[in-house]
Image (cartoon, rainbow, N blue to C red; front, side):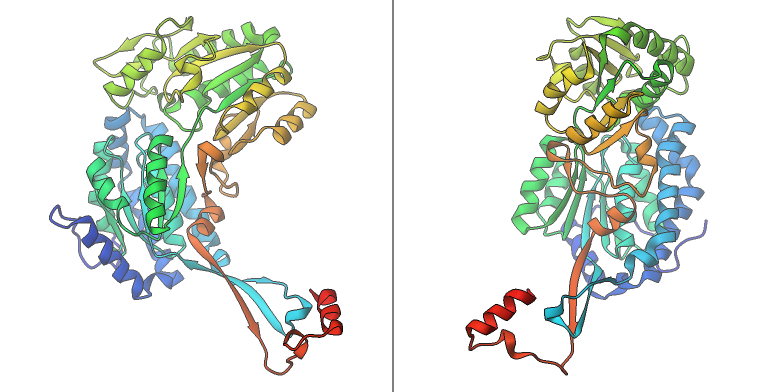
Length: 471
């Protein structure tokens, strides 16, 4: 295993070290200016790439233990996703880090203007349990590319992956600049009490508000990736068979525990039965006759979340699925027909393998109610109509929109990813992440050789008239 030549030692953060001590060490490293060098940034990204490649088997094992993820799913949605992100970032970093020239108005001539992307300082990344590798390291990639020091707090609800991250990061990366602290609520509370330059949090809305409140005490910058109820609209002109296949893939990946998974379907009545039949057929095609025993189907993260999901099914009209294995913490892919608008299924983010199907006469009829809800992280629309596509994109607000597929927009590093309103604050992936974790500093350079006195007092009517024309 090849390691980063810049790391001074091979220790993890010891239990004896307080979070404040680690924070101060990272700040001290940033103050040396080490991270300003794009060569250093590239070396850390390359080292992280080696980590993912060298330790892929161990990482896949940990993801299986925490969430029941198959090797294929672990690779495509976590390890491979991160490797693609690193490759794109390394390819573009030189261009992103260059000063960005902008025009200079006549009144400020002779001079030049440009924008410099400078690192913020020390960034705290608080990860989530549902993608315990991707959602801690993708923000880390952006933070390192932008030249920051990083403190990673993996989710304690995915303990095997969290422990492995803490073990591996110092073996590959410069641990004067990148640290990992494990723990739960107490450790997170201690971290949030510190004046980080930026806090990046992925998780639920309730904790997001706590993070935002904590950040406000120090005026720390924040990025909040929160989720919400992402609707999936199916209009009569859609290819129902293909729509069902893509909905099943997007909904039941990671057993439905994905922030951008379709949370519920709104389908036109005239194609509802066909869609339900196609979805049931696709569940069998992708996961077999007994999905709960499929090697490609994951598990619920813990019994508490399983009980939460079970409570949603009380009194529900279950079309398909609904079976639960408490010992293995698994729930079958489940379809629910037209749940009440005030039910838990329609009021809370489901974050599990339950898919409500809501009937509407026409998609246009559902848009008023949809726009009255909190803005979702993702919006899906299946349609063959260009008119309906353009209308929905133009009139319904969401963090991201995907037409005729689910979640595939996540594969494009050129698209910024993030929420709006209740679903989040800030963007990342690709250049959006680099900019999010940089300070875009405005610079103007003037010359001495021409100093027009028009802007200086004393003022006169002709001076004011001339300034009005120039400004």
